[in-house]
Amino acid sequence: MLWVLEELLMIEPDLPADEVSRLAALHELFLLDTPPDPYVDALLRIAKSAFGVRGVLVSLIDSERQWYKSRIGILSLEGPRSTSFCGHVILSDELMVVNDALQDVRFADNPMVVGPPEVRFYAGMPLHAPDGSRIGTFCLNDPQPHTLTDEQMQLMKDFAKLIEGLFAAHQLRFEKQGLLEALGHAERRALIDPLTQLWNRQALQQISPSWHRRAVRDSLQVGFIYGDLDFFKRINDEHGHGIGDDVLVQVGQRLTAAIRPDDVAFRLGGEELGVLALVESQTELVAIAERVRKAFCDSEFVVDGQRLAVTISLGTAIGSDPLADDIDDLVERADAALYAAKGNGRNRVENG
View 1 (cartoon, rainbow, N blue to C red):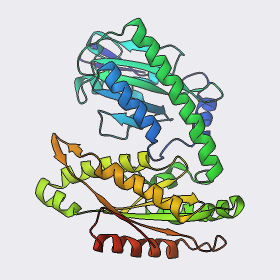
View 2 (view 1 turned 60 degrees about the vertical axis):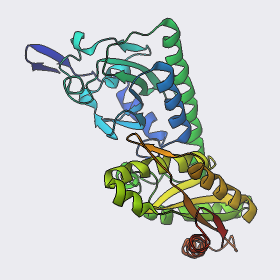
View 3 (view 1 turned 90 degrees about the vertical axis):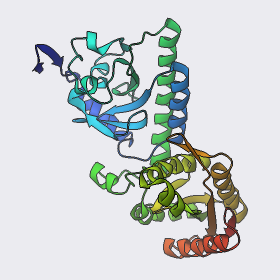
View 4 (view 1 turned 90 degrees about the horizontal axis):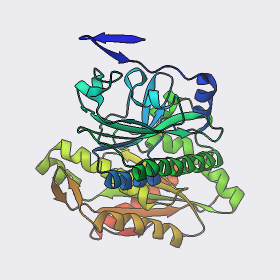
């Protein structure tokens, strides 16, 4: 399909010949509409520094949209496939480089070029499912024209290979946990907090039964960590809710980076957070909570050029009976421990 705009042609990406099987492979990975992966996020931060560009994305190409599993330099979580650069990338196995989009007939009138985010440079490398299907891209963009050296082109391929490995590990982990197989995309999206992209309180109720089953099977105990940001209202009052929201986005990123790969993070509401974990002892659970606490207090948050000190108080509780499937009791005891942490000076961990 061709869109005629002021005598220039924006070329909509074709559908791959394997579109049906490609979409099936994408959906089988259980990546769409899921919380951020801290390891993918970390790779993108490294890539941004390595390439010196404004935007770095991991984009998954669904039937009608491109959905960003991880993103730097763009606020939206998804965009239309019809106007995407990435839709062109998945048509081959080759790296696609657009040095200056205004000089490329495919993209000169693209809404992402003539409007925000005003892309001039783009480079995208296809990402593959385990069966070889091209399901998305690792891509760079910048508002200034760029070229890539041969070394940088190889680096693009290396980053893509690492991300594919993380995707495979993600699939194995979530299949093992039994979190997503029974949920469609719409149901999954309803269980994710739109700001932080963490699971929400409703998701905790849905996920916890499988956690108790795994605890029984693996002779472990279900643990819960309840966290609450200290004096967060001051940030909203003194800096505005926009800054407060940006802090919460970083809070989600620090939380997921601090916990173990098999732990699950939640935003329970407002500035309240939770972590569900399988552990051998209370000591192990407290160690996880301490890592979370240190992830917040060891370095300031930087938002819109402002440095903000943010700390968190945490309460922990461990299931006394692995056969008892009662997440509400566990959360209540962790909440009581959190209340004690607040009363004992904040920025600390207390046991329930």
